[in-house]
Amino acid sequence: MTRLSARDLIALVLDEGSWESWDSPPDRSNHPDEYAAELAAAAAKSGVDESVLTGSARLRGRRIGVLVGEFGFLAGSIGRAAADRVVAGIERATREGLPLVAAPVSGGTRMQEGTPAFVQMVRISAAIAAHRKAGLPYLVYLRNPTTGGVMASWGSLGHVTVAEPGALVGFLGPRVYSALYGRDFPADVQTAENLYSHGIIDAVVPPEEIAGILERALTILMAPRDGVAPVADPGQESVPDVDTWDCVTRSRRPDRPGVRRLLRYAASDVVPLNGTGQGEADPGLLIALARFGNAPCVFLGQDRRGQTTDHPMGPEALREARRGMRLASELGLPLVTVIDTQGAALSADAENGGLAGEIARSLADLVTLEAPTLCLMLGEGNGGGALAFLPADRVVAAQHAWLSPLPPEGASAIVHRDLDHAPEMARAQKVRAIDLYKRGIVDRIVAEKPDAADEPEEFCRRVGAVLEHELAALVIAGPGRVSARTRRYV
Image 1 (cartoon, helix red, strand yellow):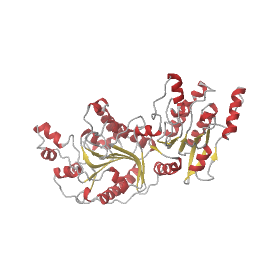
Image 2 (cartoon, one colour):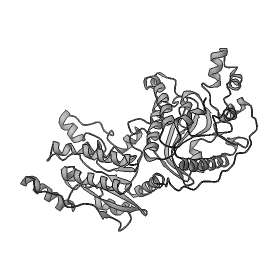
Image 3 (cartoon, helix red, strand yellow):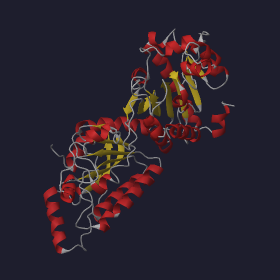
Image 4 (cartoon, one colour):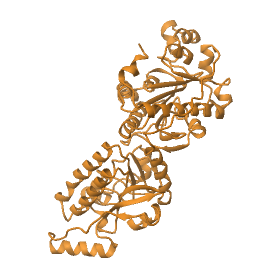
């Protein structure tokens, strides 16, 4: 694998001629002669004076703060001077209100400086936490290799984190493992691709594509929150009083459009994210940064394509959703949740994974979230797994969407001890969107003409127009109060 130098990466990704260094020469006066000679040799070899360069630049015209590692300088290791430089760069980006992009490449802490260098990771992590608390994006591109204290601090704190294909990424370096334990570390564990498969990073992206990913992410994350123009209300068409069981049946059609087609036809920008960042991912949830028109959001959609009989939506999906909730709150972005699920998993694994607790925490997080919230009921809405996505400032529903404590067949089994009364139970439980609209639980219904599956593109575009209008209004209004969010259920 060809490793790009820090300056090569700057030239490849950032606008030509826009780099402005923030660095001053490091102080080497207190180092022992042998170590000072090592540092001088590293500088001569790499062409830079430390293992990290910091500065500002433009990315497709947008000014950003940048931290870039240089592996050619003592394997990108972090000593006190490098840590001082990183912290100063983060703090300057925060003061200037700049989004920050980091591209670490490092073997970790500089062994020549030992524990005094090791503890600098505390300062670096604190500076990033302050940057994030200021509502500013922190985006990370992990390069080959990123290990040790760097991976365990500024490499793992991004709002969005992607990695170079084939990159060695992990905590303990494989050479250290072999020396300590007398055997090789298992292959294909500390790789970018394996981290992606486990929901730890969001994507694997070659260097030549990183500028496009960063631009799309920053277009959404840095979208204006003040002075947003209202979007014309597309209006609400009258909908016929379709029988409840007919709605349930239509919502289950395999060709009914789900969240992926909604984003394809209705969103103007999409940056998919992946997993919890903590080792879990569930194909039943789609998490993304998105824009509908000019309105940005964090998007959490229950994905009908990813939910199967063998793999229904599990507690991992709710933990992934709660990552999205934290992103929305921290960055001041509206949150869009989409309900479309056959129901959460009923299994020993789900119980052991704390499914009930995750539903409760999702409900609590949504009700109290410090960000505007919008729920879209798109299709099936079975049980607590659906309810966990419902609390919001505004609730929009497709005409044939519905919400029930159990599948109607399950309700029939409890009450009648058979499945034959499912249509009757659905009607009695008032599960339809139109019933919920009459009770004030749903604010708006999007018509299906006569069925979303028969007009997927047109339906998705109608939904997108409603989301754009509602999101713009929510950005203008700001987050709702807990009392207002819960009043609709009284």
